[in-house]
Image (cartoon, rainbow, N blue to C red; front, side):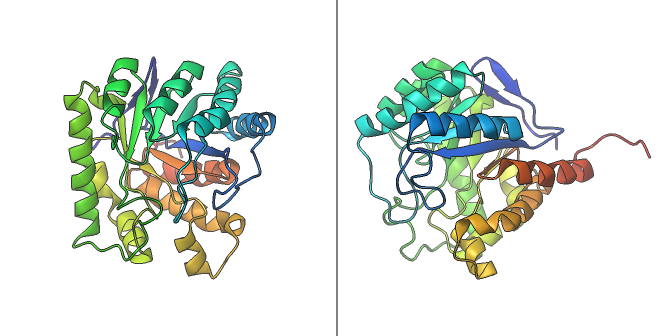
Length: 284
């Protein structure tokens, strides 16, 4: 099956021959991996530019932590945090995504030059789908059971891969009904968002089920706690090799985009994975 291209505003991101990389810039004091490191706009912009130089196809800027147990942030504060960073990166020619579920933040981000809305609630706010349709931006729709405050309180599923697929197909259809063009939608199984370690591993093992929907699939495993439990490694920054392993597996199973903190290590992992499973070059 040929993997679908992803259209974001006036750009087409082809995914058939290689896996796209989305780098992470958290402009937050409390994100699980790098909270507080990039709170200042200048520092965050410099980091985003470095991620782009390292090989990121998109830089995802977020002003509200979605780690388990995280408290919500007012839209005004989220805007204050992310808009200068998005504007600075866009002015430098870096393609930018905004990680938000609030329409007012999304509007400000799009005005500042963002190309994608990365929505962990999958059009949970009724205005978000219409905003994507009107602006022509790209959208990432993620599966999450509950909210960041509650999502890890005994999540249960019958068949996690089937339930996540069905939910995301339903949310994407809602967007299409609101006028969002299908090719602008990317879906994300939400690794770590209302899932146990077993659920996360099953989603990665059966990723083809989500890929078969025809939507580009984004996978975000970077430095997450299920990797720490497997490794017995409490420090998120020390989980980059494990992240690279999951990235290679996701790419081999058809992921269109991987969202990571360490872009350089990821670039090496996906280059090898793509050379094995996506390359049409038959040269010896």
